[in-house]
Image 1: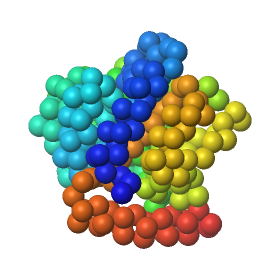
Image 2: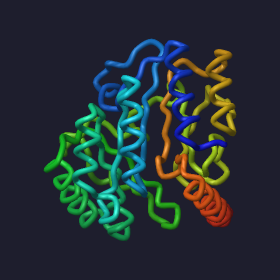
Image 3: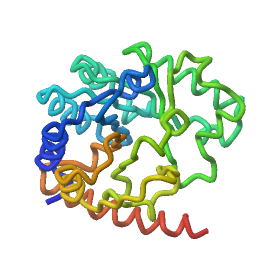
Image 4: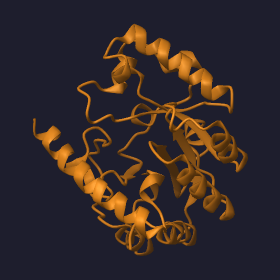
Length: 252
């Protein structure tokens, strides 16, 4: 089965065997990523304990990655966040303030600063990544048409600070690796890359056969990955329903 911790471990092992180095997003922003590398990124939209399982697995393998956390009540779990940071992973802010403020920049920046401070009271925060919020007509990235996140001592935001003609972007949006048709905002433009991998096994084969680009950002959502069969089936059904809704939103 796809989207299990077992196949996720196999994916990481394959990357290691093929000579990829792992960097956090902040390390990339500091210019530390070079050669054959992966920026391993996780967006924590649900089930923070799943994120902790991911973090422990990666730490066992000597891998560091970046975990972008929302600050809503069901996700903002200081103990979990601290445990992940203590495993030597980076914590970032997964912001949705512009959507929550109804597109009003002056309120959104106040919310952004408040939520950033909540996270910084637990761990250092140097990077941010927008939440796509497909149900909203507002785009969280539009906050930066009025303000500059650098003023908040932020080193980078992936959608602004990565050249995706140099770094190939892989994301499990839609519970697949080629889910652009179901993605409202979690997608990037590239004039260089046109690779398609549907399943995690497809990704693994691409790495093994050296058809995978040498520099990657790989985004996953830990709530989708589990070895629990009931939880796995629930996520499968829920994601299929969400994909149908997203298709409708995209066609509007």
